[in-house]
Image 1 (tube, rainbow, N blue to C red):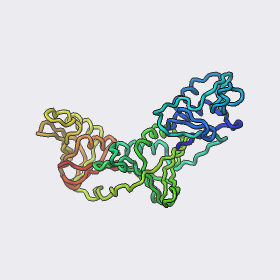
Image 2: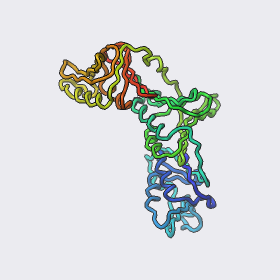
Image 3: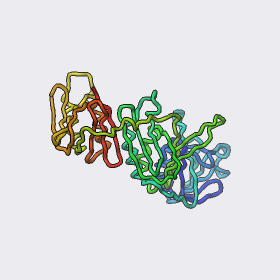
Image 4: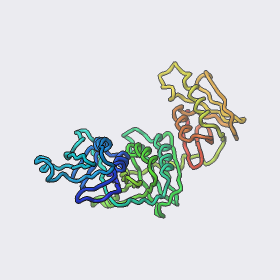
Amino acid sequence: MEQVNIEGKRSGDGFVAHKDGLVNALSRAQSERVTLFDDDVALGRKGFTAYLKALAGSNIVKIVPANGNASGQQIADKGVKVVCGSHESYLPNGAWLKEKTPFTYSQIRVSPCNAVMPNLGSVELAEALSKVLPFTSSDEARPIFQCVRFLQKDGKLTLAGCDGYSLSEVILNFDGGEAEAEALVNRDELKGLVSALRKAKRVKVSFEEKPNGDEGLLAKSLVVDTEVVRYKLQSQIGEYPKYQGIIPTECLARASVDAKEAIKASQSLLALWYDDSLKPLARPIILTIGEGKVTLEVKGERGQTEIAAETSGECKVAMQGNRFLQALKACGGIVEMQTVSRSSPVLFTVDSHRCVVMPMA
């Protein structure tokens, strides 16, 4: 359940607010239904938002329950009366809702002032999410791997996404309290949040735990507050894999390369194959680190290219092409690659961001 926070004034059982502010807040919500008047009336969020955008006559909108000024049928049924300048209309309960509209809700809450004390940068959090979401799994049979893990510990907020073959982890400085907390949030609940966070001015992230029935279990949630919307994201029940053990701590070979240059070279090489059933980007690409360069090559010596790099040590390792490209795109800039052996995971690092890709035989 999301909470849309509107700066405005109460008007009986309804409210008066700036129209553009209301539209802006509703456009950042992720749910498909919006409720008003203590959940007494439900409307389709997208249809309601488009209707408000189309209103003309005033920058101020007044929204109250339909009352005795409406027609007889409108008095009997639940609904919404909207006044904008000289415009006046009535919206029935359930407007813009269909049988297949998902049951996800936003609650509108009105207050004279909505203040958020930020503990994290909004763009910083959006960037972190964009780096870990592509590494989560789409397999519904593996619900934990469909989640992004949020971990609050020792003044840091760690985000991780993993599908069992590759991993992405971002660590952010975070003032969230001393207690350790964790939430596992499904990828589908987070995808729309990235664009919403890029528009936000202030962000506060916190964790909630509440008793879940009489079973003695705790229902965990991740709460993301912005100046207009509170996103409450339910945590999945389960244990995230202890992935730290697969991250290389020793290094046989290391190379620092330009991610964009490596991406272009890899894409051109992977397109050379034509005599198998594999999709081009699913084919293996072989990396050789050593002598001040990284050599990329594909099957049967059909093609190879060399990229200048700062290197130490020597090693050859094969990775699935799409996973190699995914790690490079997530890291960007000058990325450092390191590995222990041809059968060990390859670690990609840029500042506080780490990616791990499992090798191919």
